[in-house]
Figure 1 (cartoon, rainbow, N blue to C red):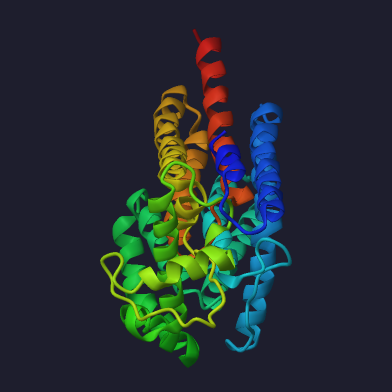
Figure 2 (figure 1 turned 90 degrees about the horizontal axis):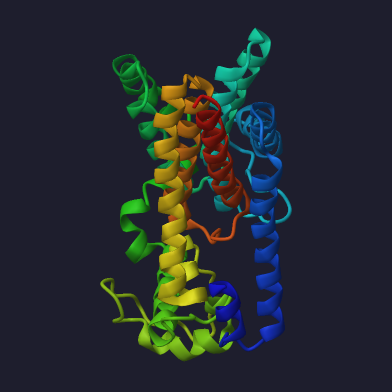
Length: 348
């Protein structure tokens, strides 16, 4: 409802496009409802996880292989469509990596397990090969989250400490240079400064229209961009240079500022509620599944939560607030919750 209201009250120059983006979002929401209505059994749940892996991770593994064979010379980019941007692809890969390890757990065939392990390794390579700084940070955070939940903390810590410096030396020099710019991005990186401008304009739009925002992709609207551009240098905690008049509007490249500019503070609050509720509902599902002896669900819930963390962190670097994979994750949380309720009712 909030999205419909913000679309109806949009401030963009082309309302037809804005309503088109709204319809696209409705289609993604329809995927959420489709999954919650159709997926019921353990077989259904595992099958849809395989769908995620075959659609995202298999492509990432292919690109990771090319990156290795070219000794870092192959430039990894996304697939046509929503994942065409390498930063967006890095988000999707990070979300799926924990699910690969879930499939390793539920798979009995040794050769498939080995294949999945190779798939996971190539997916890590693919994230590195995207050259996405946010993707690499997200990968590190996902690795840390997985380490916290592991029974082999000391062994894994030793492996990382010994292997990381060696692996770093084998990365292309251009990759090391790009990652080293993280600390100076706000002052020296024109790409990051452009994102700061977009974040500021998104916040300014929401400040002016706190309940509705400016409508879908408001920050990329040339009229809104031009109107708010003069106010950006001193707005917010970070000072930025003035926006050049000839600069074309930049996308938000941050799921939170994206929602803020599109739907105002009300929309951002609802978005944060969806993220946090999905995470904590799933956290409770872990306890329920453990009590019922459904260890496969414990693994899946843990993997989904790590994926949600990856989305929430790596989302700081991309415009993927309406990403269909994230909605599929949220839907699986609902499916698991319903599955556990049925199991609890069955067992009295």
